[in-house]
Image 1 (spheres, rainbow, N blue to C red):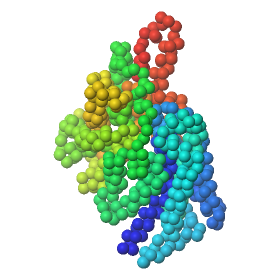
Image 2: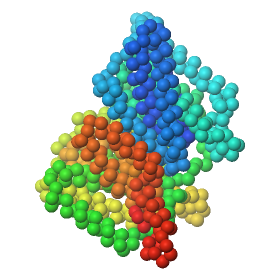
Image 3: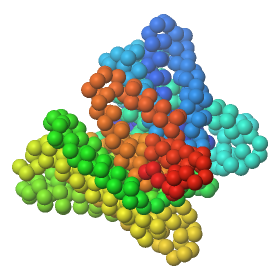
Image 4: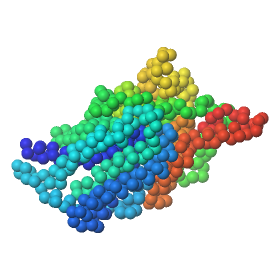
Length: 629
């Protein structure tokens, strides 16, 4: 019994830092509606700066003063980020703000390595809490007891701040209805800045307080951010009490899951998150949101099929791409094959996001399922490559059919978070079901048939399938189904009023997107010759989001350009510099600031301005709006 009590207390100590970080993210998202992927980066910077300060200054004052000073310094950095970057894109599509914070995260990952080095850093013990307390033969670190006490104290301070101050009342009001707060004359600009500063301070404080317990390393931002998203969604957006309860729940599940359910320990948290979202979409302590801002597509120019000239130009570009094996080497062809595969992956998510208005944070699940489907058929059943390519993506189709049924019952960020939960469940199964999937050792030896084994032949295969998938999805956009799907995106109530079964249409789009992603995954398995759980991971889902947003979520074909630019730049930078994430992240942030509609979206805007500025009778005026796609 003493052992389980100690395990419970260890879980409570872990919940302290998780609560601090999650409460900060909950406040930021509740007010600004920014899905802040950089929140984990602020947590990591807080830990690194606290390590430096506590090592430089001795004694209790040096340690605790360094912890607080680190959190304040990172809060100041957060204010600068909000003023310089986020203020410029508050009126951009909401998911484009996610792209900016993702680019910032990439930059921070390389910056901390550049400043502090790649090695793990072990901080010193906290003065006054270096010992342990004996509990029926089990030792409990006194620092853990300190964290257990600190967590409810911080909760009380935050409760007083939000319940007993005018600023807190404004923040709570903005969490429920930002537009109404603005109508009352509140300066939203400075309210957002102050909220962002408080949220970042809490994240940095959580990181700083971890240095006596864990080593500081450059991957701790990604480790914390997924759990933080889970906590925020379970607790309820904007709810501090909800963040506290959810942090305790998640930490205790992590503490006891490995003991009671060792084979599904990683899945438990995401199962709880999925159940909460299905039963109570706004979280345990959250409240239903007011009407959201416009979904992707409402600000787009009227879409239309390509003109004859544009079809000829697209065909010419495809022919030029098909000529690559005539003058490129094997490495370039392998890179070209990978880019073609990621074009398939990106256009599948783009179809769901742009046409359907449904932003998935876990789209890699269906990409990975397609890859595993091929691996199972090729290695276990011994089927030929053509059969595997035809049947393998059906595993992604089945996953999308099951998960999509539950996901389309929700909307907005709750839909996105449920897709993330499902994706993490699939990843956890692949990681822990070693007897079937090989676990983190993966499934090896998934090689293409002899007719597709050469780099040139495989490149032509990948390019041909990518072209067919892109054309098929584009045809679907302008089909009766596509028009019905866009109707549900633009106005759910109006579409249902004219007899459209909105949920069935959205579910069908989800299945189409999942199956298409599975096709990309099937090809990827043959390209790499192996399949690993990482093919289902959140980082791959984020890559897909970046490709879509980079190209332009409000365009019909932006994902093609986004995938080509992002993947080619990523591969090239890795081969050219050790600071590839810093350069790529800076490029993404620059695109966010300069081209807030994405690359293709901005080209459309420039073309439209050019037509408007052309004199009457100019041939430019004869081209319809949205001709550059």
